[in-house]
Image (cartoon, rainbow, N blue to C red):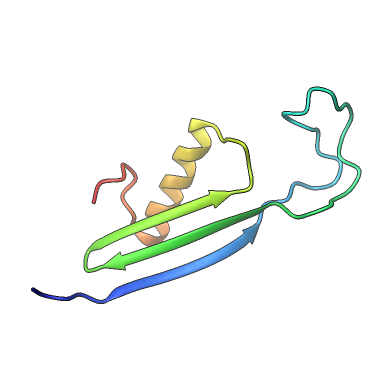
Length: 88
């Protein structure tokens, strides 16, 4: 049995839209946001063991589009080398 080092890195980032952004997902609300009660956050956990790299991302959102997901995957691939298709 061989052992490889496991490397991990984590970061949290603010994804709060600016005041005045139109609401999405709130059918009863009209107009735009008037302030910020709590920030919306994203978190990234990057793990690496040998040549295998994995990225886990969470966002304080209900959902994102496939186009957004593909852009994020491409960006992570360019910056840290995690495969876009998710293969190990």
